[in-house]
Every structure is written in C-alpha cells, then in structure tokens.
Length: 102
Picture (cartoon, rainbow, N blue to C red):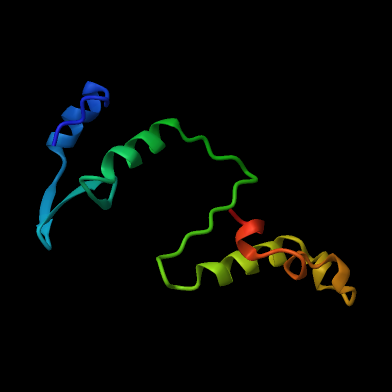
C-alpha cells in the first residue's frame, strides 16, 4: 500500500516494520503495538505532531464497553462539587455525558 502523502521517511519505515497477517489483514508492529495498515499512517502522524500537556485527560474504551458510562464518570471525578448535597451543580443532571466529554 503506497502512502504518497506521507514523508518518504515514513514510507521507508513502513516497509521495514515487522509484519504479520491475521484474519486476512496485514498488521505492522510499530513501537511495541500492532497496527492495521489502514491505521498506521494516522498513528505515525499523531506521534509526530502531538504534544501532551499536564492537563490532558485521555478517555479510551472499546466499542460497546460502556463508553457513555465512562464519559459520565470523568466529569464527576474531575469536578467533585456536584457530589455535595446540592444537586444544582451536578452537570450530569443538566447535560448528556456525550456533551460533557466529546
């Protein structure tokens, strides 16, 4: 698979990565993780351009494993004011979890 929009260094690296075929799909091992060929360019671009901050919070889950529930927990943990006896400050009573954690 050619990635003409990718820098040549990535294209060279892509060809040198360990590769395995699983369920009729090629997987490439890059930095200790296995990526499908369709996901690897995005992972490489993200790694090249992303700068984490101390205030960043990552919420990840697989599909159908309670993502909305996790989105509801995070604001509650990060903003314990809503946990007081006064429910007026609880953001979950006013908004859906998907609005609180896009």
